[in-house]
Length: 427
Image (cartoon, rainbow, N blue to C red):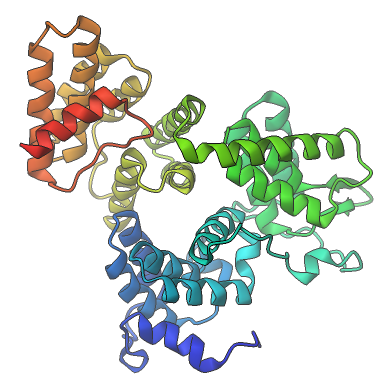
Protein backbone atom coordinates (compact mmCIF):
# COMPACT_ATOMS: atom_id res chain seq x y z
CA UNK A 1 0.00 0.00 0.00
CA UNK A 2 1.47 3.35 -1.06
CA UNK A 3 0.71 5.83 1.72
CA UNK A 4 2.69 8.70 0.27
CA UNK A 5 5.02 8.45 3.28
CA UNK A 6 8.76 7.93 3.00
CA UNK A 7 9.62 4.37 3.96
CA UNK A 8 12.28 5.83 6.20
CA UNK A 9 9.58 7.52 8.31
CA UNK A 10 7.65 4.30 8.86
CA UNK A 11 10.86 2.43 9.60
CA UNK A 12 11.83 5.21 12.00
CA UNK A 13 8.59 4.64 13.90
CA UNK A 14 9.63 1.05 14.46
CA UNK A 15 13.20 1.93 15.35
CA UNK A 16 12.04 4.74 17.64
CA UNK A 17 10.26 2.10 19.65
CA UNK A 18 13.71 0.95 20.70
CA UNK A 19 13.59 -2.30 18.72
CA UNK A 20 15.97 -3.62 16.12
CA UNK A 21 13.99 -5.08 13.19
CA UNK A 22 16.61 -7.66 12.35
CA UNK A 23 16.62 -8.82 15.94
CA UNK A 24 12.97 -9.84 15.96
CA UNK A 25 12.36 -13.27 17.37
CA UNK A 26 10.86 -15.66 14.84
CA UNK A 27 9.42 -17.62 17.73
CA UNK A 28 6.99 -14.93 18.90
CA UNK A 29 3.93 -14.29 16.68
CA UNK A 30 3.13 -10.62 16.07
CA UNK A 31 -0.17 -10.84 17.91
CA UNK A 32 1.47 -12.08 21.11
CA UNK A 33 3.69 -8.99 21.26
CA UNK A 34 0.75 -6.78 20.26
CA UNK A 35 -1.62 -8.10 22.92
CA UNK A 36 1.12 -7.88 25.53
CA UNK A 37 1.61 -4.25 24.49
CA UNK A 38 -2.09 -3.53 24.98
CA UNK A 39 -1.99 -5.18 28.40
CA UNK A 40 1.04 -3.06 29.31
CA UNK A 41 -0.83 0.08 28.31
CA UNK A 42 -3.81 -0.92 30.42
CA UNK A 43 -1.42 -1.07 33.37
CA UNK A 44 0.06 2.34 32.48
CA UNK A 45 3.39 0.83 31.37
CA UNK A 46 3.83 3.07 28.34
CA UNK A 47 7.58 2.51 27.92
CA UNK A 48 7.19 -1.25 28.05
CA UNK A 49 4.40 -1.11 25.48
CA UNK A 50 6.67 0.74 23.02
CA UNK A 51 9.18 -2.11 23.01
CA UNK A 52 6.41 -4.67 22.50
CA UNK A 53 4.78 -2.68 19.70
CA UNK A 54 8.17 -2.49 18.00
CA UNK A 55 8.37 -6.27 18.12
CA UNK A 56 4.89 -6.58 16.61
CA UNK A 57 5.69 -4.09 13.84
CA UNK A 58 8.89 -5.90 12.97
CA UNK A 59 6.79 -8.98 12.19
CA UNK A 60 3.71 -7.26 10.74
CA UNK A 61 4.02 -3.67 9.50
CA UNK A 62 0.60 -2.97 7.99
CA UNK A 63 -2.41 -2.33 10.27
CA UNK A 64 -5.51 -4.43 9.73
CA UNK A 65 -8.98 -4.51 11.22
CA UNK A 66 -10.22 -7.88 12.44
CA UNK A 67 -6.76 -9.36 11.96
CA UNK A 68 -6.83 -13.09 12.60
CA UNK A 69 -4.55 -14.27 15.38
CA UNK A 70 -5.30 -17.92 16.17
CA UNK A 71 -8.39 -20.10 16.03
CA UNK A 72 -11.39 -17.80 15.70
CA UNK A 73 -9.82 -14.91 17.62
CA UNK A 74 -9.46 -11.56 15.86
CA UNK A 75 -8.06 -8.21 16.94
CA UNK A 76 -8.00 -4.71 15.49
CA UNK A 77 -4.30 -4.35 14.70
CA UNK A 78 -3.59 -0.60 15.05
CA UNK A 79 0.05 -0.46 16.19
CA UNK A 80 0.77 3.11 15.11
CA UNK A 81 -2.26 4.39 17.02
CA UNK A 82 -1.06 2.67 20.19
CA UNK A 83 2.49 3.94 19.64
CA UNK A 84 1.02 7.42 19.39
CA UNK A 85 -0.86 6.84 22.62
CA UNK A 86 2.29 5.66 24.39
CA UNK A 87 4.31 8.69 23.32
CA UNK A 88 1.36 10.98 24.11
CA UNK A 89 1.27 9.76 27.71
CA UNK A 90 5.06 9.99 27.94
CA UNK A 91 4.81 13.64 26.72
CA UNK A 92 7.04 12.92 23.72
CA UNK A 93 4.77 15.01 21.55
CA UNK A 94 6.67 14.95 18.26
CA UNK A 95 6.82 11.14 18.21
CA UNK A 96 3.15 10.97 19.19
CA UNK A 97 2.15 13.20 16.26
CA UNK A 98 4.34 11.22 13.83
CA UNK A 99 2.72 7.92 14.78
CA UNK A 100 -0.80 9.37 14.80
CA UNK A 101 -0.19 10.70 11.28
CA UNK A 102 1.11 7.34 10.04
CA UNK A 103 -2.00 5.72 11.55
CA UNK A 104 -4.25 8.17 9.68
CA UNK A 105 -2.36 7.62 6.43
CA UNK A 106 -3.00 3.89 6.56
CA UNK A 107 -6.71 4.61 7.07
CA UNK A 108 -7.85 1.52 9.00
CA UNK A 109 -8.65 3.61 12.06
CA UNK A 110 -11.50 5.22 10.10
CA UNK A 111 -13.44 2.01 10.71
CA UNK A 112 -12.58 1.97 14.44
CA UNK A 113 -14.48 5.05 15.65
CA UNK A 114 -13.70 4.56 19.36
CA UNK A 115 -9.96 4.76 18.69
CA UNK A 116 -10.54 7.50 16.11
CA UNK A 117 -12.27 9.64 18.73
CA UNK A 118 -9.27 9.32 21.04
CA UNK A 119 -6.77 10.04 18.25
CA UNK A 120 -8.65 13.12 17.09
CA UNK A 121 -8.85 14.50 20.60
CA UNK A 122 -5.19 13.85 21.47
CA UNK A 123 -3.86 14.89 18.04
CA UNK A 124 -5.77 18.17 18.20
CA UNK A 125 -4.55 18.84 21.72
CA UNK A 126 -0.93 18.37 20.68
CA UNK A 127 -1.43 20.69 17.71
CA UNK A 128 -3.31 23.25 19.81
CA UNK A 129 -6.30 23.31 17.48
CA UNK A 130 -9.90 21.98 17.39
CA UNK A 131 -10.31 18.30 16.52
CA UNK A 132 -10.79 18.26 12.76
CA UNK A 133 -13.05 15.81 11.01
CA UNK A 134 -11.12 13.04 9.31
CA UNK A 135 -12.50 11.92 5.96
CA UNK A 136 -13.73 8.32 5.82
CA UNK A 137 -12.28 5.88 3.28
CA UNK A 138 -13.07 6.52 -0.38
CA UNK A 139 -14.93 3.20 -0.65
CA UNK A 140 -17.41 4.36 1.96
CA UNK A 141 -17.97 7.69 0.22
CA UNK A 142 -18.44 6.15 -3.23
CA UNK A 143 -22.15 5.49 -3.89
CA UNK A 144 -21.21 3.41 -6.94
CA UNK A 145 -19.21 0.91 -4.87
CA UNK A 146 -20.33 -2.66 -5.64
CA UNK A 147 -22.49 -4.65 -3.26
CA UNK A 148 -20.34 -6.70 -0.89
CA UNK A 149 -22.78 -9.55 -0.34
CA UNK A 150 -23.28 -10.72 3.22
CA UNK A 151 -19.93 -10.74 5.03
CA UNK A 152 -20.08 -12.08 8.53
CA UNK A 153 -19.19 -10.42 11.82
CA UNK A 154 -16.56 -11.95 14.16
CA UNK A 155 -19.40 -13.80 15.88
CA UNK A 156 -20.19 -15.65 12.64
CA UNK A 157 -23.50 -13.91 11.91
CA UNK A 158 -24.27 -12.04 8.65
CA UNK A 159 -23.92 -8.27 9.08
CA UNK A 160 -27.64 -7.68 8.66
CA UNK A 161 -28.51 -10.06 11.52
CA UNK A 162 -26.23 -8.13 13.88
CA UNK A 163 -27.65 -4.84 12.53
CA UNK A 164 -31.32 -5.74 12.98
CA UNK A 165 -30.57 -7.22 16.41
CA UNK A 166 -28.97 -3.88 17.32
CA UNK A 167 -32.07 -2.01 16.16
CA UNK A 168 -34.28 -4.30 18.26
CA UNK A 169 -32.17 -3.48 21.32
CA UNK A 170 -32.48 0.23 20.53
CA UNK A 171 -36.27 -0.10 20.48
CA UNK A 172 -36.15 -1.77 23.89
CA UNK A 173 -33.77 0.86 25.31
CA UNK A 174 -30.91 -1.64 25.87
CA UNK A 175 -28.19 0.72 24.65
CA UNK A 176 -25.26 -1.45 25.70
CA UNK A 177 -26.34 -4.51 23.69
CA UNK A 178 -27.41 -2.23 20.84
CA UNK A 179 -23.87 -0.83 20.68
CA UNK A 180 -22.29 -4.29 20.72
CA UNK A 181 -24.45 -5.59 17.84
CA UNK A 182 -24.24 -2.44 15.71
CA UNK A 183 -20.46 -2.42 15.98
CA UNK A 184 -20.39 -6.09 14.97
CA UNK A 185 -22.44 -5.19 11.88
CA UNK A 186 -20.19 -2.25 11.09
CA UNK A 187 -17.08 -4.40 11.48
CA UNK A 188 -18.39 -6.72 8.77
CA UNK A 189 -19.96 -4.09 6.50
CA UNK A 190 -18.67 -0.53 6.72
CA UNK A 191 -20.62 0.83 3.74
CA UNK A 192 -23.98 2.49 4.56
CA UNK A 193 -26.67 2.10 1.91
CA UNK A 194 -30.21 3.31 1.41
CA UNK A 195 -31.09 -0.06 -0.17
CA UNK A 196 -28.74 -2.70 1.17
CA UNK A 197 -29.36 -6.24 0.00
CA UNK A 198 -29.56 -8.85 2.75
CA UNK A 199 -30.63 -12.17 1.23
CA UNK A 200 -32.78 -13.14 -1.73
CA UNK A 201 -34.64 -10.02 -2.84
CA UNK A 202 -34.83 -8.45 0.62
CA UNK A 203 -33.38 -4.96 1.12
CA UNK A 204 -33.06 -2.74 4.19
CA UNK A 205 -31.94 0.82 4.93
CA UNK A 206 -28.48 0.40 6.43
CA UNK A 207 -27.45 3.46 8.48
CA UNK A 208 -25.18 2.04 11.22
CA UNK A 209 -23.22 5.22 12.05
CA UNK A 210 -26.40 7.12 12.83
CA UNK A 211 -27.76 4.43 15.14
CA UNK A 212 -24.42 4.02 16.92
CA UNK A 213 -24.54 7.77 17.54
CA UNK A 214 -28.02 7.33 19.00
CA UNK A 215 -26.86 4.46 21.22
CA UNK A 216 -23.85 6.36 22.58
CA UNK A 217 -25.92 9.54 23.00
CA UNK A 218 -28.40 7.71 25.22
CA UNK A 219 -25.53 6.35 27.33
CA UNK A 220 -24.25 9.89 27.93
CA UNK A 221 -21.02 9.13 26.05
CA UNK A 222 -20.99 12.48 24.31
CA UNK A 223 -17.67 12.47 22.43
CA UNK A 224 -18.34 9.04 20.92
CA UNK A 225 -21.86 10.15 19.97
CA UNK A 226 -20.37 13.22 18.26
CA UNK A 227 -17.89 11.06 16.38
CA UNK A 228 -20.53 8.70 14.98
CA UNK A 229 -23.06 11.46 14.25
CA UNK A 230 -20.41 13.47 12.37
CA UNK A 231 -19.48 10.40 10.32
CA UNK A 232 -23.16 9.81 9.50
CA UNK A 233 -23.48 13.47 8.52
CA UNK A 234 -20.41 13.38 6.23
CA UNK A 235 -21.68 10.23 4.52
CA UNK A 236 -25.17 11.67 4.05
CA UNK A 237 -26.57 8.55 5.72
CA UNK A 238 -29.91 10.06 6.71
CA UNK A 239 -30.23 12.87 4.15
CA UNK A 240 -33.88 12.99 3.15
CA UNK A 241 -34.92 10.57 5.89
CA UNK A 242 -37.26 11.77 8.62
CA UNK A 243 -37.29 11.80 11.60
CA UNK A 244 -33.69 10.54 11.49
CA UNK A 245 -32.30 13.67 9.79
CA UNK A 246 -33.87 16.03 12.33
CA UNK A 247 -32.85 13.81 15.24
CA UNK A 248 -29.25 13.72 14.03
CA UNK A 249 -29.03 17.52 13.82
CA UNK A 250 -30.54 18.14 17.25
CA UNK A 251 -28.71 15.31 19.05
CA UNK A 252 -25.38 16.20 17.42
CA UNK A 253 -25.69 19.81 18.58
CA UNK A 254 -26.58 18.69 22.11
CA UNK A 255 -23.80 16.08 22.22
CA UNK A 256 -21.24 18.68 21.09
CA UNK A 257 -22.38 21.06 23.81
CA UNK A 258 -22.26 18.42 26.53
CA UNK A 259 -18.95 17.02 25.30
CA UNK A 260 -17.39 20.48 25.54
CA UNK A 261 -18.94 21.05 28.97
CA UNK A 262 -17.73 17.66 30.19
CA UNK A 263 -14.19 18.99 30.49
CA UNK A 264 -15.18 20.82 33.66
CA UNK A 265 -15.74 17.62 35.61
CA UNK A 266 -17.34 14.19 35.74
CA UNK A 267 -21.14 14.33 35.68
CA UNK A 268 -23.34 12.19 37.87
CA UNK A 269 -24.96 10.93 34.68
CA UNK A 270 -21.61 9.68 33.41
CA UNK A 271 -20.82 8.07 36.76
CA UNK A 272 -24.15 6.24 36.68
CA UNK A 273 -23.56 5.13 33.09
CA UNK A 274 -20.13 3.76 33.95
CA UNK A 275 -21.46 1.94 37.02
CA UNK A 276 -24.21 0.31 34.97
CA UNK A 277 -21.76 -0.72 32.26
CA UNK A 278 -19.30 -2.17 34.77
CA UNK A 279 -22.10 -4.03 36.53
CA UNK A 280 -23.12 -5.58 33.20
CA UNK A 281 -19.51 -6.64 32.53
CA UNK A 282 -19.19 -8.16 36.02
CA UNK A 283 -22.35 -10.20 35.43
CA UNK A 284 -20.90 -11.51 32.17
CA UNK A 285 -17.68 -12.37 34.02
CA UNK A 286 -19.69 -14.30 36.64
CA UNK A 287 -21.34 -16.24 33.82
CA UNK A 288 -17.83 -17.07 32.51
CA UNK A 289 -18.56 -15.20 29.27
CA UNK A 290 -15.08 -13.73 29.39
CA UNK A 291 -14.86 -12.45 25.81
CA UNK A 292 -18.10 -10.48 26.13
CA UNK A 293 -17.08 -9.19 29.56
CA UNK A 294 -13.74 -8.01 28.19
CA UNK A 295 -15.48 -6.16 25.35
CA UNK A 296 -17.65 -4.23 27.81
CA UNK A 297 -14.75 -3.52 30.18
CA UNK A 298 -12.70 -2.18 27.27
CA UNK A 299 -15.59 0.11 26.30
CA UNK A 300 -15.37 1.53 29.84
CA UNK A 301 -11.67 2.27 29.30
CA UNK A 302 -12.50 4.26 26.16
CA UNK A 303 -14.15 6.97 28.27
CA UNK A 304 -12.26 6.34 31.51
CA UNK A 305 -8.79 4.99 30.57
CA UNK A 306 -7.64 4.49 34.18
CA UNK A 307 -10.80 2.88 35.53
CA UNK A 308 -9.48 0.64 38.30
CA UNK A 309 -12.34 -1.88 38.26
CA UNK A 310 -12.25 -2.40 34.49
CA UNK A 311 -8.47 -2.69 34.40
CA UNK A 312 -8.34 -5.21 37.24
CA UNK A 313 -11.01 -7.41 35.62
CA UNK A 314 -9.30 -7.28 32.22
CA UNK A 315 -6.12 -8.46 33.95
CA UNK A 316 -8.10 -11.34 35.54
CA UNK A 317 -9.56 -12.28 32.14
CA UNK A 318 -6.07 -12.20 30.61
CA UNK A 319 -4.82 -14.47 33.35
CA UNK A 320 -7.63 -16.91 32.63
CA UNK A 321 -6.65 -16.93 28.93
CA UNK A 322 -2.96 -17.45 29.67
CA UNK A 323 -3.59 -20.41 31.96
CA UNK A 324 -6.15 -21.96 29.63
CA UNK A 325 -8.72 -21.81 32.44
CA UNK A 326 -6.53 -24.14 34.53
CA UNK A 327 -6.48 -21.53 37.24
CA UNK A 328 -9.93 -21.11 38.80
CA UNK A 329 -11.56 -17.66 38.56
CA UNK A 330 -12.07 -15.57 41.70
CA UNK A 331 -14.82 -16.82 44.03
CA UNK A 332 -18.31 -15.87 42.91
CA UNK A 333 -18.69 -13.97 46.20
CA UNK A 334 -15.99 -11.55 45.02
CA UNK A 335 -17.80 -10.46 41.83
CA UNK A 336 -21.17 -10.44 43.58
CA UNK A 337 -19.62 -8.27 46.28
CA UNK A 338 -18.39 -5.83 43.63
CA UNK A 339 -21.90 -5.72 42.15
CA UNK A 340 -23.40 -4.93 45.55
CA UNK A 341 -20.77 -2.23 46.05
CA UNK A 342 -21.65 -0.61 42.72
CA UNK A 343 -25.29 -0.56 43.84
CA UNK A 344 -24.32 1.15 47.11
CA UNK A 345 -25.33 -1.81 49.27
CA UNK A 346 -22.39 -1.72 51.65
CA UNK A 347 -23.55 -4.34 54.15
CA UNK A 348 -24.12 -6.99 51.48
CA UNK A 349 -20.81 -6.03 49.85
CA UNK A 350 -18.89 -6.39 53.12
CA UNK A 351 -20.43 -9.81 53.82
CA UNK A 352 -19.61 -11.20 50.36
CA UNK A 353 -16.14 -9.69 50.08
CA UNK A 354 -15.15 -11.01 53.51
CA UNK A 355 -16.12 -14.52 52.36
CA UNK A 356 -14.07 -14.08 49.18
CA UNK A 357 -11.09 -12.79 51.19
CA UNK A 358 -10.36 -16.29 52.49
CA UNK A 359 -9.02 -17.25 49.05
CA UNK A 360 -7.86 -13.82 47.86
CA UNK A 361 -5.68 -12.53 50.68
CA UNK A 362 -3.01 -11.28 48.25
CA UNK A 363 -5.45 -9.44 45.96
CA UNK A 364 -5.12 -5.65 46.24
CA UNK A 365 -8.44 -5.05 44.50
CA UNK A 366 -10.39 -7.10 47.02
CA UNK A 367 -8.97 -5.15 49.97
CA UNK A 368 -9.57 -1.84 48.17
CA UNK A 369 -13.23 -2.67 47.45
CA UNK A 370 -13.74 -3.88 51.00
CA UNK A 371 -12.26 -0.60 52.19
CA UNK A 372 -14.73 1.32 50.04
CA UNK A 373 -17.61 -0.71 51.50
CA UNK A 374 -16.48 0.13 55.04
CA UNK A 375 -16.27 3.81 54.02
CA UNK A 376 -19.90 3.67 52.89
CA UNK A 377 -20.90 2.07 56.20
CA UNK A 378 -19.01 4.83 58.05
CA UNK A 379 -20.81 7.51 56.04
CA UNK A 380 -24.22 5.93 56.71
CA UNK A 381 -23.57 5.62 60.47
CA UNK A 382 -22.25 9.16 60.89
CA UNK A 383 -18.89 10.66 61.76
CA UNK A 384 -19.05 9.55 65.40
CA UNK A 385 -18.89 5.89 64.36
CA UNK A 386 -15.14 5.16 64.16
CA UNK A 387 -14.94 1.37 63.91
CA UNK A 388 -15.93 1.27 60.23
CA UNK A 389 -13.48 4.07 59.47
CA UNK A 390 -10.64 2.12 61.11
CA UNK A 391 -11.65 -1.00 59.17
CA UNK A 392 -11.66 0.97 55.92
CA UNK A 393 -8.21 2.38 56.65
CA UNK A 394 -6.89 -1.09 57.50
CA UNK A 395 -8.19 -2.54 54.21
CA UNK A 396 -6.76 0.36 52.19
CA UNK A 397 -3.42 -0.08 53.96
CA UNK A 398 -3.41 -3.77 53.09
CA UNK A 399 -4.22 -3.01 49.43
CA UNK A 400 -1.30 -0.58 49.21
CA UNK A 401 1.06 -3.06 50.87
CA UNK A 402 0.24 -5.55 48.13
CA UNK A 403 0.33 -2.97 45.32
CA UNK A 404 1.83 0.44 46.26
CA UNK A 405 0.69 1.90 42.92
CA UNK A 406 -2.98 0.96 43.41
CA UNK A 407 -5.46 3.81 42.86
CA UNK A 408 -9.20 4.21 43.27
CA UNK A 409 -11.17 5.49 40.31
CA UNK A 410 -12.34 9.10 40.54
CA UNK A 411 -15.29 8.54 38.22
CA UNK A 412 -16.78 5.77 40.36
CA UNK A 413 -16.04 6.65 43.99
CA UNK A 414 -17.02 9.76 45.91
CA UNK A 415 -14.64 12.41 47.21
CA UNK A 416 -14.95 11.39 50.86
CA UNK A 417 -13.93 7.81 50.01
CA UNK A 418 -11.02 9.03 47.87
CA UNK A 419 -9.87 11.36 50.68
CA UNK A 420 -9.74 8.48 53.17
CA UNK A 421 -7.80 6.35 50.68
CA UNK A 422 -5.32 9.15 49.95
CA UNK A 423 -4.94 9.78 53.69
CA UNK A 424 -3.81 6.18 54.14
CA UNK A 425 -1.43 6.44 51.16
CA UNK A 426 0.27 9.55 52.61
CA UNK A 427 0.94 7.76 55.89
